[in-house]
Each structure stands twice: as C-alpha cells, then as structure tokens.
Length: 97
Image 1 (cartoon, one colour):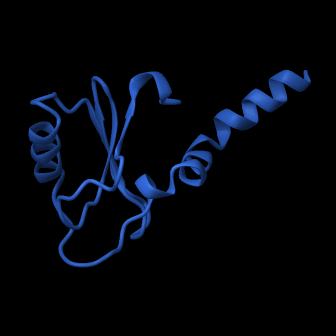
Image 2 (tube, one colour; image 1 turned 30 degrees about the vertical axis):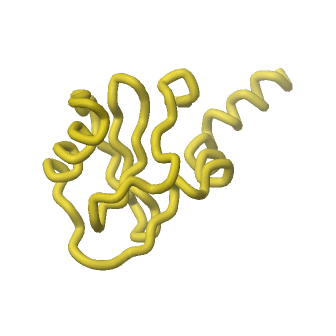
C-alpha cells in the first residue's frame, strides 16, 4: 500500500515536480502578444525538423511556458514570442504523461 501511495503521489504531482526539476524549461517572462496555437505549432514543427504536433498544452499561468507534444517528446514553448526556453525538449522516454 505504501508503494501505491508514493507512486500515486508522484503521478498526481507530476506537473509540479516537472517545474521544480526543470525550471529553465518551465518559466517564461510574460509580455507582448500571446501567439496563437497555429503559430506555436508551425514554429515548433520547423524547429524540430518538420515533426508533426500531436497535442498542445497551453499555459494556465502567464509565467509558465506552454507545451507542444511531438512524436519525439514534449517541447516547452514561450507563448509570447517564438523562442524555446533553454534546453526545451524532453525525450518521450522522460515524459510522465
């Protein structure tokens, strides 16, 4: 039961743990115009060798980056200007969801 509790807690708080462990990918400076999902997707596809965007996870807070799910992993994106945060992509093998 203890193992189930611990693993369940890790799964429940995966986004928060992600931000804690990867702050350079998670936080952006708010400002300017928010890019549309199509602009973000087009830029991500160009940046990552034409990979198709599988899904989008828009930011819920102004200072958190948005995420774009690609076949190879998740790209963290500054939604105010197309600039990926430092070290912005985690391989699919490291992704929790």
